[in-house]
Length: 284
Length: 302
Image (tube, rainbow over all chains, first blue to last red; front, side, top):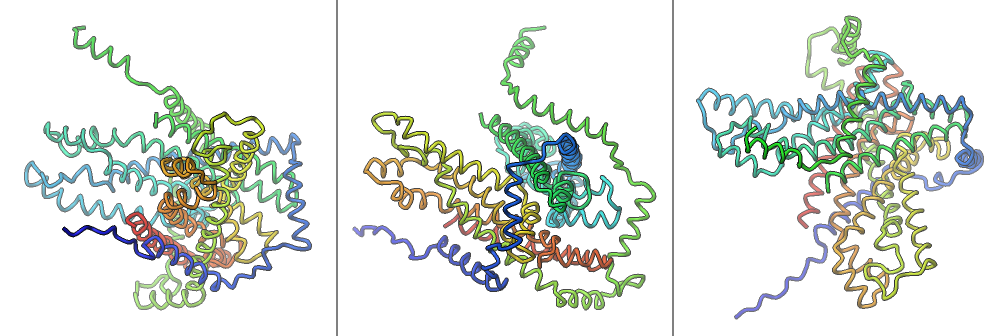
């Protein structure tokens, strides 16, 4: 009887190949960018700036003026992020529904009259493909590019900033929502279908409730990201944290820069804690 | 109320509840309400806005085609010309910046991985000793974990764009600014993800090695690295995707990448070129996503 010999692993497996590819890409990129490693070590005036900047970390500006500005900046950031997240959530729900397959595909067990079947075979897949392409295209454009576009089209008003964040975030939410629903556990869906529910009923009562915890947790995580994006929008003239960081740093007032940086840190860490606690409370 | 309804009501009373969750959702709802009631956002589309938008649609059509019927040949020549005048080069350097940045980020993150993992950075990793550790043995490790975790939080809490802005006056106007900005932020994220990998590692092998008298270095080389290598690669490519996305915009600070050309076109009021280059940015992001999806599939099935 032939004994199976333990198979010897390939000398360079797929993972090794990936690492090799990464290293080659890295070497090529360094060559392509003509990186000058000497520039990594600041000297002269730049070293002074670095020193002053870190001194600023120890002596943040805590005058009442700076603190009241800081509070205003934080509130503006929260307002932008919340408004953008609300719009993004609406977009995500609508587009996520359109770009999911579960509410129309019957897993080959289509019942009902021919007219509905016909719709299901033509219109619904077309809507699905169109929605998928739409969210892929709009998601791939960075929110700051959207901001630039809306600034050019509509000028600096809060609406352009909110929309700039809401569009790419809404499309990301749509992608994740639809995938979460399509990949939700199917037991209750199968039971509902066996009891004679339509695909839409199965979607609403069998699949969405199963995916809802994941969806809510993900939405909370994205809220944390909107806060960061809203802060950065300040660099483009909206009065969020970025606006004040830019202003104070360009005035070489490093103490005040750190006041706003600490505010940003606190905001992000608080949001991180909140969304983390939210996810953990689901895991229980 | 009949017996059945009573039973249903009793079940409803006993349903599992999560007060933290309910309060969080309530707080979120209240926040949304306050924001929309106090800030007075004009979310409607006024006539002026629509007019502005119409003008904008004309501005972003390729210049040789403005006010003329669409001609694909002319549009194609215009596109090729734009790409040859720096668009293509900027796209390549954007990708290069993202690759260098993510490799540096992973290298930096791996320095923090082990000291940030609570189950590894303690007096007796994986197998508890016969006696509980004394305070003198315990607290230096606790301090190490706290210090590395604080550094990681600081690194990831500051967004790439802010890092790049701050680094601009220290490193100067070159690719390093973008690379370091991406690397620092992503090192914070990857450091946390990889230390969680170590904390959630299947403890059979490391415990067995420790029981045989292996030291920390041996446990790392023969158990932790082989066990979490696939996940490491998955995280690497997942973060690379976002690096590509962020690298396209960092140019707007003046660093030679796609964003620089886009900002340049905006300042020169050539909105048609600006719009086209933004689409090129989107194409790079999609290309990066595709490469990453393929690479992650290879890693997962290796």
